[in-house]
Length: 113
Length: 114
Image (cartoon, rainbow over all chains, first blue to last red; front, top):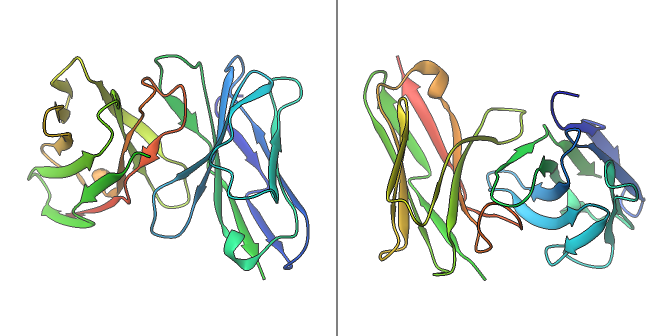
């Protein structure tokens, strides 16, 4: 596609439930990033993939958060035992890596009630 | 880790005037500084970036300046238009070139008054 696609655009879940957020990067982009953006804040880095492997997962807040990119294209961010504090917009971005900037999707707004 | 401070949090200017947003960073290893524009309900969009071997970069009405010694960089928008209204974020990347995670400022809400 022409841009980074994230689904769903909105997700409401109950506290304690499991959720999966999907990201379809721009075709051919080897680098993929997940960020979290709380209201009134800048995006906060979570994890970076180069190809299939997580090159840097230092931003994941705890072991309830996990992300995969099994074939080096689509990525899924998984959150277990969701908490109200997980409510935020989860942004995905893709790029060519190296010395190039990257393109963000429109995000998934997650609300934990 | 890197810390990026951004000022002001809100900036209101008359249409046609200039707007300046300033950021400071803490990690002297940072060498890539992008600026993003975010409109309501959308993801951030890269508008301009600068690398540490360059002091200034311009693209039409937008310019960015970098002072590595003082560890600060600024976004300048001239001849502002209503469509410039948005939230602007500065960011830095110690790894250079966006290859790893960016550290973002908290954003500036730019309001263009007609």
